[in-house]
Length: 104
Image 1 (cartoon, rainbow, N blue to C red):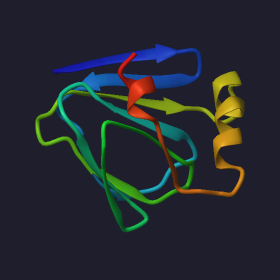
Image 2: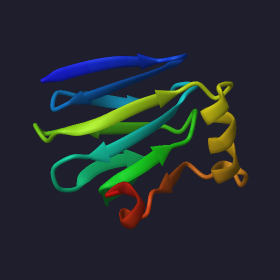
Image 3: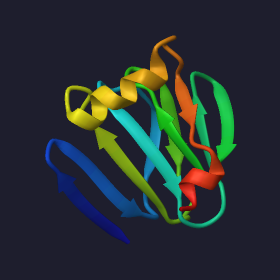
Image 4: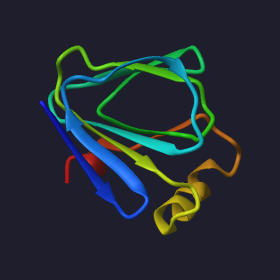
């Protein structure tokens, strides 16, 4: 299943088919699990979580393994992108979204 959508200059998908080897890009990227936890490798750090935001230019790879999830690429110059920048002031590679927030 792949449902792709555009929201202004941002791109999202609800899918169970993403398989992405190690790469970087200039956009922030959300991953939110819709079934269990996700495993994502960011800068060689393997992370298991239900929701995460990957910083722009952070090297990451993701294999959905058939699990449904939402992924959302955010243009850093958009309004939401400028708001996200505050979570990465120390140039962290990722921001874990607390489960109580991601499940609302």
